[in-house]
Image 1 (tube, rainbow, N blue to C red):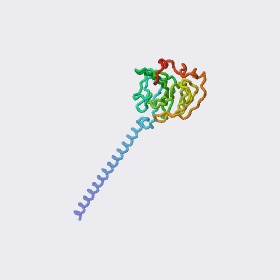
Image 2: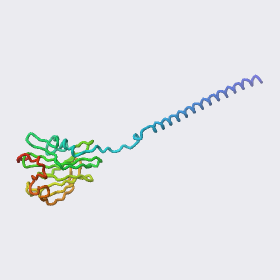
Image 3: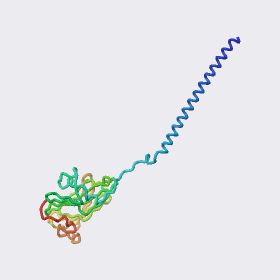
Image 4: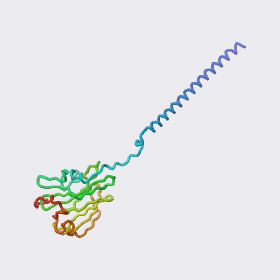
Length: 246
């Protein structure tokens, strides 16, 4: 009987030793995995805390750099999409002026304004360009340049007519107000009798007239009420050549 109990007791002790070893190993593995997860979570928190705040901030809309009227003096008039006075290629201004071999000139006029015309938050520019073909015709065009990184990009235009000098331009609430001298549709071309205040809005590649109001032009409108060649309304530099139709 004693001989039979000894092997049974030895076998039981061996099984107990194996079970204890397995449990101890499993506990160590669980503790190791738990420690690794805790370390990983802490590392993630450290990385998140170390990241600069700007990386998590919502990006703001870029409104572009400041655009000035002076920048228009060395820019282009016209574009492949918006042709100026029928010219296929844009006209490069140099100090506000361009001239062709045949004597035709294009000149940037004094009235100019800066303001947001397309609603993107950046201040655009609107000015006046005059084409002089060397004759009696002087064709005035209202032109808009978009602000692209602080540089003017020709966007749209509106023809104001022949010998219609512009007195002022302003921008407010996304609209441009232009004051210029003109005449009735059946009036003599050389006579300016109407002072027109017109409101324009930029729509794509067009400057669309929304409304206008007319008053009678007088001698106080730059001395141009009786003539389309008044010195005040049109710079003397634009009147160098004799008559020749464009």
